Amino acid sequence: MVEIFELLENIKKRPSLYLNGESINQLKAFLEGYYFCKHSFERSNSPQDQMWFRFQQWIEKKYSIKTSQSWAQILLFFSTDEYEALKNFWVLFEEFKNNQPQIEK
Image 1 (cartoon, rainbow, N blue to C red):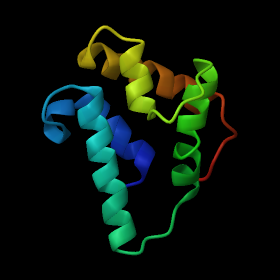
Image 2: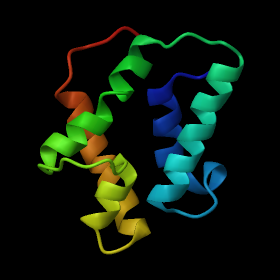
Image 3: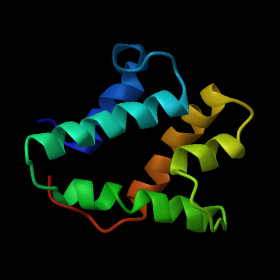
């Protein structure tokens, strides 16, 4: 199974291959399906998965938000529409990765 960061990079390059429309909620739904599949096949979480799971807290801290809203909903709130929220996600995800300790591939 492809690791989460490689998968996200593939989605970024060709979103229409993975998503039913370029929207932040389509990305979130796809990633929920990815993790449902991993869980269903009892795949353990990799270091990349552990890092990804911190993205929610990082977004909350970045926007000074204390809420039960998902990272996708927070990004949508601070964007004009779903498409812009997705574009903002790619920028913020790169910033997030660059501010994390290096992990194994």
